[in-house]
Amino acid sequence: MVKPELICPAGTPAALRSAVDAGADAVYCGYQNATNARNFVGLNFTPEEMEKSIRYAHDGGTKVLITLNTFPPAGKVELWKEMVDLSARLGADACIVADIAVAAYIRDTYPDLRIHLSVQAAASSPEAIEYYVREFGVKRVVLPRIMTVSEIRGLLKEIPCEVETFIFGNHGLMVEGRCSLTNYVTGQSTNMDGACSPAACVKYERADDGSMSTILGDYMIDRFGPEETAGYPTICKGRYKCDARDGGYYAFEEPISLNASTMLPDLINAGVHAFKIEGRQRSRAYVKKVVAAFREAVDSIMAGQEPKLADLVALTEGQKQTEGALKTKKWR
Image (cartoon, rainbow, N blue to C red):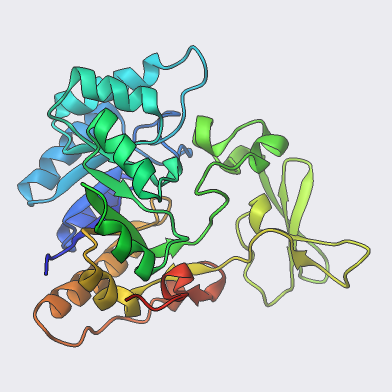
């Protein structure tokens, strides 16, 4: 039984240090531009910060995976190439990519730099994964959240690379990040600009009765009662009214978080190589608590002990948790 790596989020240098200190085997992070799918103001790394952070991580025995996981618009691939060049020069351990042109550039220019296939590539069949391995030398594929443990176990018998699965954090699916809804309202998209619901387009309005409305661009996305916690305005997780329903309803997705902590033994036995925690937009306190909890859990399982996980409900979106598709079917 192989011990899986714990892959942890780092939206800032401070969060990266917290993840390293809490026992992350690897951190994933991005630059302050459109090459990374969490391109929000106040997040991500300058080249100088990345250089220092890679040094800090390596000194602590932690790998650094650079997220170059958006899709370059036509004629603008040079920025992605420049960030590949920078990552290689700074000593990154791997680049997480979704676009085949970016993968081809790494293959041809830096054959020793590991390529990890982003979940945004949505590769879940043996045929698709084998194609990426054969054509681009992909070493690891981040699997879509829609796969069950049974499917993952069967897949691992047929593919020649490592797999990584999400175990905690945002459960947004929307074809694994390739969503066009926010582009309709704000003019910026997750998969090309790296910004879903950019902060400059977000407003909160408090009514006299204490209720809170969340607004994206010119559209009200949701309204929360005085005792409810107002969520961040994303179209896919907003509540809407229509003539056929009474009150607001979730037309796309209910705000809910993935928590696969109880599934860790099954995933380890299935042969998963890496567990991924979502949350580059979260605080370093969040990173520290979640990483420490899962570090202890994985180590306990590998030592043949019952894992003890902290109550992470308070850190989850919408205060609801799910094991997602992982537990939909029993694996064989």
